[in-house]
Image 1: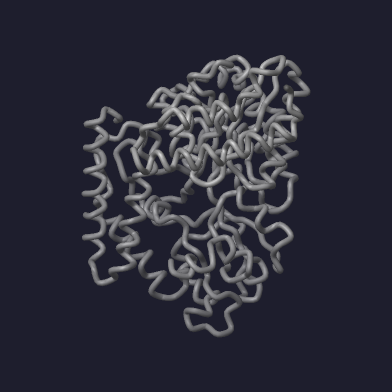
Image 2: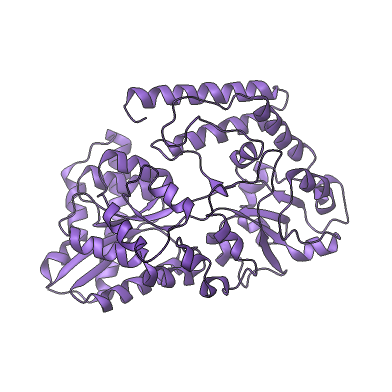
Length: 451
C-alpha cells in the first residue's frame, strides 16, 4: 500500500533511529560484524520503495531542523523536474558516520549519501562509493569548480562525491565590542601578532575590568596556527610519505598558543565545556570567533550586537584557513544508480545549490555562484564574500586529503591538549611527541596499503 509522503518520512525517520541503535550496539559488542536483524531493519526502512510505481531512492543526511527544510525544498524541486523519480529522506542524527559505516558493511546503505570530507577519502578508498567523475565533468561543462572543492573531493583527478559545500573558516567579529574598545573592524584581516597586542583590551578575564567581553577570542583549531607559522604535518597531503612537523617553527607556534591562554585572552577549554563554542560569541562573551558560514543561522536574530566576518589572521609565514567539506555520494551497491546519479547532479548543480544556500549554511562551490550577485547580496553577514574567498587556491586547506584524516586531526588536538595541561613541559617535547604520533600513524597506514 502506498504511504503518503508525510507518513513515509516519519516511518523512515523511526527506521533511522532503530538503525543507529542497532548499529552502535552491534559494533560495540562485535566490532564491525553485523547480524541479519540490522540488515532487516534497514531493508524495512526502505520497503515502501518496491511497492510503489516509478523509481524511489533513499537519501541520508545530517543537520538541524532548519537544514531539514532545505533538504525538503531541494527534493521537491528535483521531483518536480523528474516526476519519474521519488526521493525518500533519511535524516540521521548523532554519530552519523558510525551508523552509515554499519549500513555499508551490511550492504544496505542508502542510494545517496551525504558525506563529510574527513571520512570521504576513507569510504572512497574502501570502494563503497561510486565513481562520479563523469558527473563532475558534466557539471563543469557549465560551471567552474573553485580550487578548494576540487582539491577536497578530487585530489587525484577522480570524484566519488560531488561537492556541495567546501568553504573555510572566517573570523566572526563583534562590531559593538570592537567599537567600545576603540578598535577598527579588521575588514582585511589582522596578523596573529596584531591580535595578540590588542587582545587585552577585549578581555575582562585578563584583568581589564572595562573590557567589553570576557575574552578576546575563542582560538581556532591549533592546526591553523601551525600553518600560519609555515608548519606542515606531512610532505604531501594527498600521498604522505614523510612527517615534517618537527621544526623550530612548530615549537614557536606551540609557545604562541600557550601564551594566549596564559595571558587570559583566549577562552580556556573548561569554559567551552561548560558554555559551548558558538554560544560564547552569540552571547557576547568573546569578540572574535572562528567558524564557517554553516554557523551563521545560530546568530541571525539571536545576538544583541552587530557582527560581521573578516579573514582569519595571518602568521609569520602565511594566512591560511581550515576548510570543511560536504559532498553527495552514490552508494556503490545501489540498485538505482541512474536515478541516484540524476539526483546528485541536480543537487550539486546550479538549481540545487541555489536552493541549498538559502538555508544560510552553505557557500556555493562554483565560481559563477560563489562570486555571483545573488549569493554576495545575501545578508548577514555583510562581508559574506569572505567565505567564498576561502575557496581560492592556497586560501585554506585541511589536515589531509587521504584516508585517516580524522585520526590525524585527533592526534594534533590531543598533543595540544597535553601542551595546555602540562605547561611545564617544553614545547619542543610536545612537537617531538606529535611527530612520533604521526610517524606511527603513517607506518600503520603504509602497512595497510592506505598511503
